Image (tube, rainbow, N blue to C red):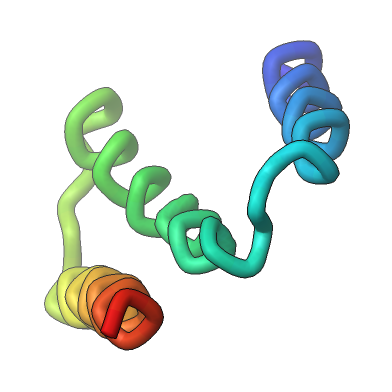
Amino acid sequence: LMVLYGTGFIVLFMSAPRLDMPRNAPVMNIEPLATLLMGWVALDQMLSAGQLLGGAIVVTGIVLLTYRRQG
């Protein structure tokens, strides 16, 4: 797990200068939501109402930021 996590961060920081980060930054905030969903799918964890609400807030924020930048 440490190797996979470390490799992911190394690839992220190596590719960051090549990406248009101001445009792609909102998508980086999907990590907590992806972790929540993977815990639910892979580990059969129960999701609380607060976790679902937090996930909805993250998705709404990303959609609003993306919509605002396109307009």
